[in-house]
Length: 284
Image 1 (cartoon, rainbow, N blue to C red):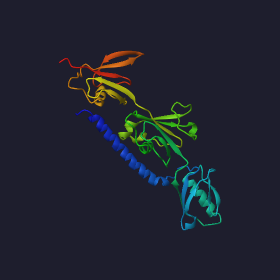
Image 2: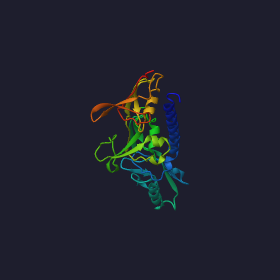
Image 3: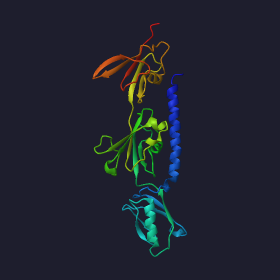
Image 4: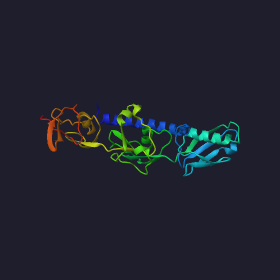
């Protein structure tokens, strides 16, 4: 196996994963107006269609108090209701002396009331509008995917009692719920961990801890350490062992109970955060 093959293959899998996620995001955005259990909030723009009544159909913005003004019936409560509940409220109001059995639909034209925050090791951290039933994969795709320095997990930090937050939350904030998701498992296809996001959630992708590789390797240095990394995989990150290197006498410098110690390891042993892998020169 050529040096770096594992790293390039992993990168290719990651790119395919996020390309598929981007397609899913585009599809989700296109159909998100049809999500019936989306909870409407202030500044959302609703697309309301009253069948056979073209003059009543149009786009209506929900005001700061959670209501909107609709022809014939005046102020109608929308904030805090699902799209289907808004439909029922309008249907009841129009049936009260205006139309017999009015038929209408309510969808989202623009999402403005709910948002999520994406911070940490992503290519485009920031605030993103929560559109319909947005999932972790979708918001990571929207944020440009994780960087090469990202750890192997994402943390979804949820505000206490699902309250609204004006900015990102830290995992250690008192009362916050923290959901840990293994990104590698998501990339491998285990979509059961693809959590649905709530208003004011913070998606935090921490920076990976480092492993150091020195000695007789082609590209010595510090590398991002993923969960379950073996000595052999760490050596691959460093370009592999040179022709002068000895794979039978590899040592690891590790801090144990506050003291530095050196241990002899095999290539299939697991690496720990902060380890320094030393590949010595062959005797002959």
